[in-house]
Image 1: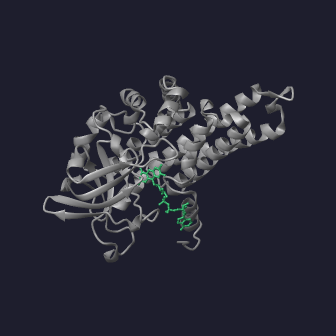
Image 2: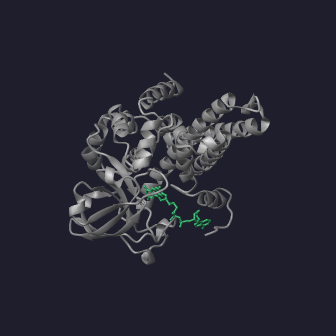
Image 3: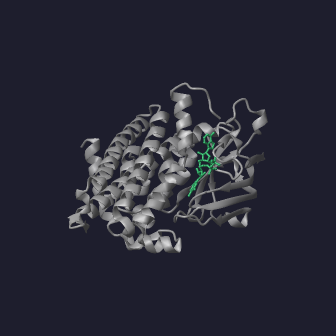
Length: 385
Ligand SMILES: Cc1cc2nc3c(=O)[nH]c(=O)nc-3n(C[C@H](O)[C@H](O)[C@H](O)COP(=O)(O)OP(=O)(O)OC[C@H]3O[C@@H](n4cnc5c(N)ncnc54)[C@H](O)[C@@H]3O)c2cc1C
């Protein structure tokens, strides 16, 4: 069976699962800002969230290509993978840089659905996009590290057992390069609120389980370190490339959902005795969004294939994220316009998806920073920041 056949089967299985979680389910959670527990449990039981875990640890041993297909289908069905996608993109860091002991300790339980690895704590209030400027420190004390500092926007921390954490183990002024001295840890946060960890929800315009996390001399075992101390940024780069590709796939799913909704509505809605879709002013923006989406999807495929081959994929992962996020935003805007006033009514789900897909212009990396990456690293232009 070729890879596209494998993806076809996975896509069909995801679609069947998602049909159990229609619009009203997401609308109720959105209104309550509640976590989609039943949806995440169903994905876990079906094994989709263990897609990237090797078979020897109880997972499916699939690649980012298949993980991208899973997330795209979730979004194409009108659902939202943001409640659980971190389990896939943090896997790159753990699989490529984690020790055998770490993998043996956690992966079988993650694969079996007994443990959730859903939190990825990088961003801090003061540092913003400048990851090298993070201040959360991890100080070695005998066989432990003592963590002090604050993270912001740590999604799903209240719904996760494990957290991938980026912290400073050496001050930035002693570092040769800005990202030296950063280390990455796989932290068990079960019961940690009694040991110096505080998690507070941050209410946002979307239902995203966002939180801020405070570390008050929070002690973790030294064996929580992933890879070498001080070289953590390299370890999370694999995770970040996977994250960009997988988020791009979600954007493609959103874009296809918007285009299908807009097309169906434009065929059916009759104004001035004709379907609105007969007007080129309505039809062409949908066609343009479709073309942009299909082009972006090719870049997502290419980036995922390079990641799975172990080839450098920084520029493809960034371009996939840029193009797919732009395509989903274009499709969302077009869909809202096509629906006219009804686009604003909650019952059509368009306004919810519109709000949800807007995030991807900003997170996990903003459009400007991708353009700066392409300018500097691909086009050899002077560094702009
Ligand atoms: C809902 C949500 C969930 C998130 N989940 C997580 C998570 O799980 N884990 C995590 O670690 N982070 C998470 N983030 C954080 C996200 O990655 C950051 O918000 C994003 O990287 C932008 O950083 P910032 O918000 O600090 O913006 P800033 O860095 O303050 O930037 C603000 C604006 O200025 C622009 N800008 C900044 N510098 C430049 C420059 N040199 N050139 C041009 N433009 C520039 C940016 O593009 C942006 O538009 C999440 C954010 C949100 C909103």
